[in-house]
Length: 89
Image (cartoon, rainbow, N blue to C red; front, side, top):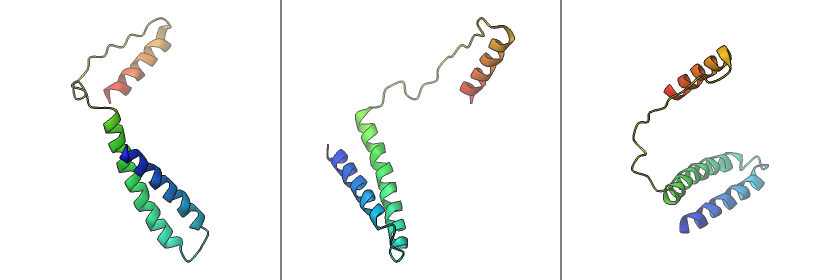
């Protein structure tokens, strides 16, 4: 739970920086600090998600997917083709 408290602190710091954004003298420093906080926030969110959603044994396995055109004639066939290509990529 320390990670969530740290995430909330980073979000409060980002909001506090937003109030300083209007000052032209501090603008460069605020931009640098914001970038650092955003990077830290992204890393922390990733760690929180990994903590909340543990990896499963099948995460790295391939799948078999079968796509059928169904009812709808040539339009259904085109849709199935596009859907297959999307999953193939």
